[in-house]
Length: 194
View 1 (tube, rainbow, N blue to C red):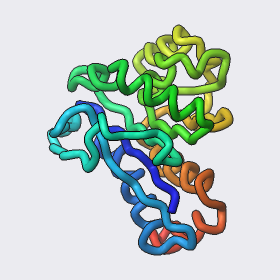
View 2: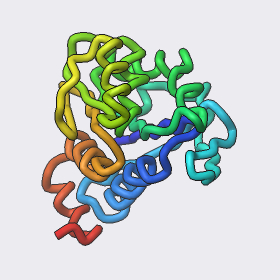
View 3: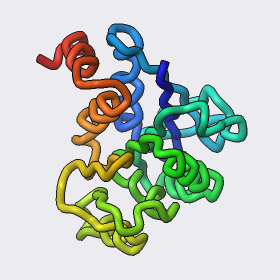
């Protein structure tokens, strides 16, 4: 069974995390090719932007990239501490490991920024949150990314997107890249996306 590692940073966006847990969960329950999802973070308890508190399933120091097929990263809010965890060198190293092994890295909204900071988006296409006078897109460009004015950008193994509204599409794209379109269709049917 394929496995997804969901990294939760302090101040993460709960909806953006939930699209991964739901789509992958429905795949595990009803998909032709079930996929598993394990949560992790740098803290024993993580508070999302809207005060939901989560206890990750797997301690960060026990993670081995070889045990997973994909890394999923929801975005979050700076004022809630998102970049404290997202820019932590331990996490940036994990992103690099996933990319070195050509594993899928799926991100929503500003979760593209730690991917950029890790250095793996240099001269690659990507996108991120596009409001706030383009601040986040400028930051992504400063990390060397070739920023695209698109809602979702896939460059080889990396998925980036512009905001919460793209969350379900990113999660379904991740599932498709892990399995196939037929499996996605089955999951969408059971989730009542028809």
